[in-house]
Length: 303
Image (tube, rainbow, N blue to C red; front, side, top):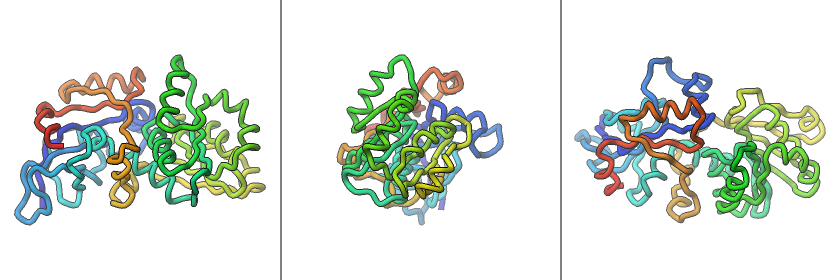
């Protein structure tokens, strides 16, 4: 049974991960294509046997993107109903990053409050979600970021949402032996690849685990042979968004409790999508960009 929804807004994430998707580095359908990775919408009409009703807040799933549009006709199995009391930006950014962070912290290593994890790309959408979820569950996080002009401001921002340590990758190279000696790090989360993956895997405790979910550097993940041979570490990969359809892995409760927040965003009207694409390809903005439906105000009142 099909359901007609009009989207309150659609989203494409700016920064290197989405740049890779636009450039074709990540898998997807052939160009030309409709863009967009996540969306939140309102059901306008529903078929007689549909499980949805007009006015329901929904997230499209399993559609492989193609979400930059004002309206769409969607099969019931490609929609998830969400609670109406979740805020609009959290709903629009719920589909991919929070479930990925949630699953990596929950399903690969048995962690207890006080345990340490380490990650690169800590200021990404996934990275920020990892920090907040880890903090909510009592885990300690060591976070790596790339150097930049406002690096102190970014460090403070990440600490304000729960990060215990924040280093630039260059700073970490000077501190890694000390970190490895002082902290028993059980889990490393890799969204960069290359030598950044080498840095975080090298400080894992014996029997530790590294999980790769992205490759912003566009280089293969480097993991030292000695870590496998002498420390018995394990390595896994997880597809971003793979778990988005599994109800228990959607961290809605943390959002509603105020413990998990959406990433910083910038809004564009849907008709001005060219500006969002230009900023993505030129790397001018590190925020996620929300494309707003022309009638978004009436939807904000509903969501």
